[in-house]
Length: 232
Image 1 (cartoon, rainbow, N blue to C red):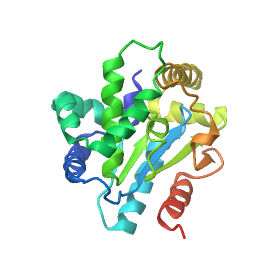
Image 2: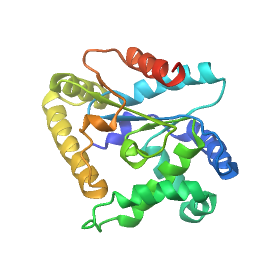
Image 3: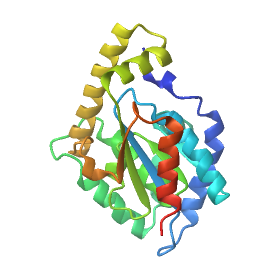
Image 4: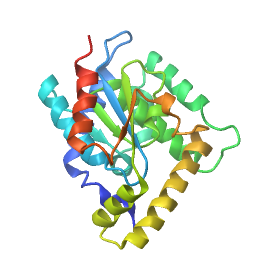
């Protein structure tokens, strides 16, 4: 069963993406960047609900529109637009340096689907540069690790929590959910390792790690918002 059913439709997010993309094109070298947040998670953690709660808090705090970015949104954008040309035209000198850093993390032995993931990296860097974005997955914490306006967080959980969550959201048996959690996590780890030559489980990539089975989604979002928007 496709895992894209775990996230809502991208239609309401497309206009926000366009506005953010246009803002990225107008940025000049040395301009103060707006914050970007990345949410990494073990498969089965409820990162998208946390991102939606965080989006509300961010918009209330800043008075500006924020965008939740995941693979379903970027896939929709790629189908709708000629992304490679538009993205490359929108990247300035200082943003290209971050792209060079991102591409440098690619495993030298990795060839499969290279163009796709290079495009994904370009999109992640462009959006992170524009700011006011919350990434769910995509290896964004690793891709943007050199960007000072980015704040990185990871969600983990006990296996039982992840299995129950997937069973409920995908409407499948717990037995099927357990296999799905194991298979999807293994595949996710393989992609990050092969593409970015990194271990997403390494806590040193993140400002903080949250246990989704011990904390409610709104609590996690509140703590992230408190850190990002109320630093002294």
